[in-house]
Image (cartoon, rainbow, N blue to C red; front, side, top):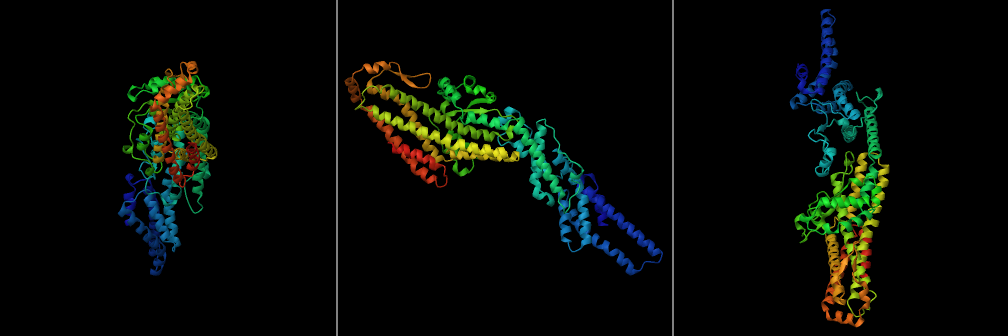
Length: 590
């Protein structure tokens, strides 16, 4: 009676495909039971049925009915549906291991009830389609998440939500699929990405790869694995070949990691006036036009992807941006944004950055988060390049007065300080480019060549970026603040060089040339001045010597304070040992 009531109630549409299939199997069992009763009644009427015979013939059915009664009671009490019914039947079958007949019956019930569920699974792993009208499948589709346009993907799709959250696992995974649920989810996602790209593909499913049953031979696992391998290879080939993933990554490396920096030198020359303005005075449109001009007039014009490069101006300095950036590895290493002191006057040189247009499906790999990490590294390198250019200009001023006899003045000491600052910034740039970015890039490149799936590609690319951020000091706030302080001192010294030299020898004003170097207007006049006049001017102005000594003391103090920090940090961050050798080498020159 209980089984019959369950069959009638669970055959309703609202109870789902698994309950429908289970009820149909129970209905077939009840027909067998009714046939047995009819046969017994016939034997009874013929006078051939004894009490012992009745007990003998009813014995097998009694055990089956008792087992099904237990299952149905639990299913009704908890209102089970979908995978919960399958898990209940399987657990009950394992519990009846001592009774082979009952266990065989329950396993048959699992087979019948799972047919509809495997039909949903088959469409997902072979077509990437969720055909689940009753919400029984263990993969959920968030239909509110749509593939964004190019502009939206650059501003909104920060965590690549479409890839990570459009399809997700739900609770209640069938026990026989629990170990490969991740593979099943990924297989359908791969097929969906290809369909979004207009690349319609379906896993070739011959008759022997149908997922209409499962058993101890685990054939269904082999079918799922074959479907995963096919979808993974198809999507990987699509992104690598048709959408040229490696070409895009190389292009981003050229521009955001300054692999080919000739365009940047030209851009910094022609955009110098605009970059030195305050934030609210900068015209991003003008910077973009200057960037386009620099790209068209340098070797970058040969890059077919150079038109995807754009420029932007951030609203805060690099240190402030790092303090507010989320998910940069270990959050304990990143200071809170409110703890960072913003410079008094922030210009375009501190906030300028490059961006890159990344289209679907490459945005799965080069997500908004990944692009932000590229931008952080670029801003750090761009600032170092700017400091290097300013110090080179200061060095050229010193070289311009080298022919004069400066013995007894502060200019030789200033020249030595300038050389030390140049060695520091050049050592830092050498470390960043040749000891961090290039080796890590080659490791990632080799790993991407052997990657078997798009998830491996994403993993290798994210690992490359996180490692570069860490080794570029961007995740070490204490060390980064010291380096930024040193760079600020170098800029202050470079800006004061013109005043220091002119105050020492009373030369005409010095202007910055179109190539970024600082040269004199009347270099020939230097040679015409007498040595006595130069010494008289230098000795009368003690402020020059004092200023140079102040710069020297502060620079050396900051530089030497880096030594212990680097030595201590190298115990947990071995890459800092290389930087320590360069930095301490600069300090030993003083």
